Length: 500
Image (cartoon, rainbow, N blue to C red):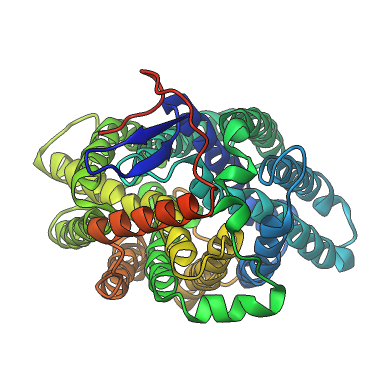
C-alpha cells in the first residue's frame, strides 16, 4: 500500500500486485458457486424430476430476484462500517449462505414429496441469491478502495481473466472428461463430488480475497474520507437518475453478460459439442487448447487498456468478438461438423479452434473490464456530488445486469422447446437434426453476437474515457486535500504496485 505521484503531480493510492491478485479471487470464489449451480438444470430435471420449462423459468425468476434485492445489498454495503471493515464481513456472510444453500439443494430436493419439491427448490434458490449477491457486490464496490490509479485498475482484469479461465475451463474438463465417465452421466454422485470440490475451493479463495483487501478496507479510502457526503436511502434514486455513465455501462455490460450466459450455458455446450460435433469430451479438451491463446489475448487487451483506457479497449474487444462469432456461423454452414476432430486435425479444425478461441476470449473481456469500470463510475459520482456510494453503484449495475441476463435460461428453454424439447433438454449423443443444427448455431454463436451489437451501441454514449478519468481523479484529490483528508503518506516500495 502506498502513495504514488505521477509526472503531472497527481497523487494516486495504489495496491501491491499480490493484493490485487488476492482480492480478485473473491470473484473467482463466487463464480465457483455459479459453476456448481450451472448444472442444476440436469439435477432438477434428471434427478428431482421437475419439468424443463418450469426449471428454466424458475432460474430466470431467481436471477431476477437477485437483481431486485441488489439495491438493498448496496445500501447495506454503503452503511456497513465496523472494526473489521466495510467489505470483509460481507464476503464471509455471503459465501457461507450461498454454499449452504447449494449443499441443501443438491442433497434434499429429490428426497422430498413431489408436491413439495418445487416450493423447496424455489425457496433455496432465493436464499442462495441473497448470499451470492452479498459476495459478488463486494467485488464491484471494493474496487474503489483497492486502487484509484487509472493505469493500475485494468490489472484486475488480467487476474480475473486468468482465474476464471482456469476455473471454467478446468471445471468443464473435470466434469466432461472425468466426472461424466466416472459416474456415467449427470447422476447424484456426480453432483455430490462436484459440489464438495467447488465449495471447498470457493471458501479458500474467499479467505485469500479478505487478506487482499484487509489493509485497504479503511475509512480513509472511502470516497473523500471524513469529508464524504452522507446519503440517505431516499436520495439514492436521484443519484442513480443523475449518473448517466452508470446507466449506459449497466446496459452495455448486461447484454454482453446475456450473450456470454447463453454461450456458456451447460445445455448449449451439450448441444454444440455433444451433438453437433458428436463428442462432448471435446468441450473440455478444446477449452484447454484455447486457454493459453485466450489468456494471451486478455494480457494484450489489458496492456492496450493501460495505454488507451478501459472504454476504448472494451469497444475494440466487442467488435472482434462479433466478427469471430459471425465467422463461426459461416464456417458451420459450409462444412460437415464431424470433420472437426482432434484425432485428425485438418483445415476446418484449425479454423474452428482459431475462431472459437478469438470469440470466447474477446467476448469475455467486457465482463472482466466492467468491474474496474464500475469503480470509475463510482469515482465519477464522488467527484460530481461528493457522495461515496460504491455499494449502490455496483448493485444498481447488478440489478440491470441480472434483469437482462436472467433471460438466458428462459431463452434457451424456449428455443429448444420450440423445436420439440418440452420435457427434457437435448442430451449427449442424440441424433443431429436440421432444426437442432440451426438452433445450436443460433444459441452458441448468433445470439451472443447480437447481444454484443447492443452492447456496442450503449458503449458509444459512455464518456468515461482515459482522459476524463484522469480529470476526475485529480478533482477528487484536490477535494481531499482541501478537506484535510488526503491519502495517508506511506513510503513507496518496489512491490507496491505496477505504476506504468
